[in-house]
Length: 69
Image (cartoon, helix red, strand yellow):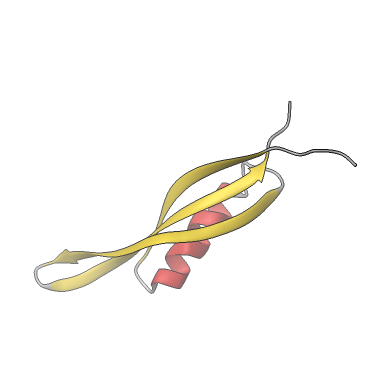
């Protein structure tokens, strides 16, 4: 049985549409430069407000990927 090590990073995804899209954007952007993504965990949600209106949704995502030597 082989052992594996995983690194966890924190990203903030944004979207003008929804928190779900914000989280998805974070993962999909990270997948362009990171390999073997494993788990994405949404840790915090917030919104950007301008002039009393919500202009963007933000999702703070913890993402793990397999660490290579």
